[in-house]
Length: 509
Image 1 (cartoon, rainbow, N blue to C red):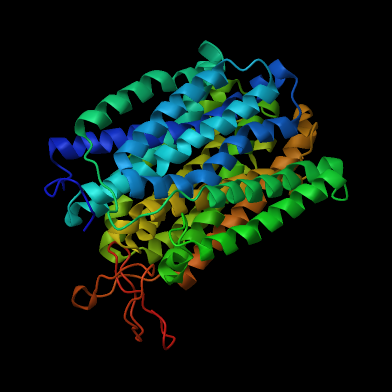
Image 2: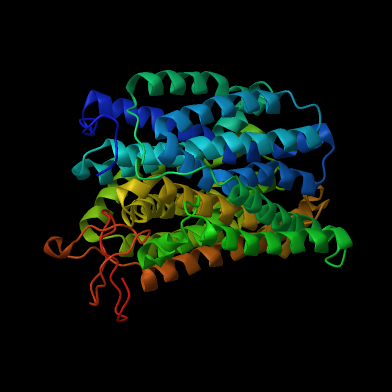
């Protein structure tokens, strides 16, 4: 059971207290999710206002994703150590302040810096939102609560382009950041009044700031190489130096995390095959999705001639489908196990991305865009809830903050790498987005690459994800952070509770 200050703090999903918790966590994480997608609609407008290159547009997106991905692990550790509600609220305040700074940015360079700082706030509040749910609800309601959080969070992500398009058309792109101020104030008020505090009382020690700095160095160096390598040349001394620093930082990160008594990333958590496999699927699928949602709005505006509002409306089916089907998908996965939804869903997502490759060839929304968006939405609705529940259920409650941070970090990292790499692979360079014919060709190639990656995620799920063991064979254990009994049998590990990780190889657990 989670370690709570209040021993009777566990809520039911249908209670007023439970609904307030869902509201606070969905609105809080929704702000961070929306800011991962809402900016995409405004990028062409921002590029014109600041006379930006395509590389600068990439940095506006990846700067936020970089600090978010690099510091999510630290955010999860801080929540487990000092209180999940406390760190969540600090993250909300930080996010609101830096959102205001983004809105006031006078040029692209300042906007990139403030986006990096905004990602720090998102890194504090995002893992806390899911960890609060995991530690606040009774066992029987956690699967449904996670499904509702995933579905409503998916709606927030999908609604980002629509909201961004409306604000850019009605006012200015700066309002996509200012809208966070009243939302953040509401989240803070609800959290202080209604969200119970919880922490891992077994966790001690000081924050792992060295590990966090190495994570930033690793992701920053690799991302710089992927974005700046194609235009500057891979033999450019600066590119080679940054990539080298990224690789060395990654190796040093592993060494430091192995040596620390209380690391922000306990590497033993990856001994759990179900957890590792789920995060592998997360990396691939969310990477493909991140690249698609980054390029599609630019393509619709530059190639198809859509306005920012029209390009936001073009993605509206994502919102309706996620809102309608995500919770049902979570319930279905709870009944039949996550393997089938997590295998089929990414393949459907991939099919939607391939269909979107036809969008530059057609001026008709119903023919060129709608089929791909609809299929993409159906695939996401089938994938998101079981994927999240499986990642969280593979570990014990005491490490829910770290598990949530790892899964979110992997998702953001997938999008970060894909946004930096896939455009270059597709031939989209610094000035391509200013030329419709070149961008159309690059987008077609990028959509096919993203679709293939998503299908790969489905195949990985079919091969690696396990369905729940029968109830009488479930045994709750720690998630590998401390020694557990050895189990040798060919049974599937339960995805929605912290259960024994079963493997057919002798001597592994």
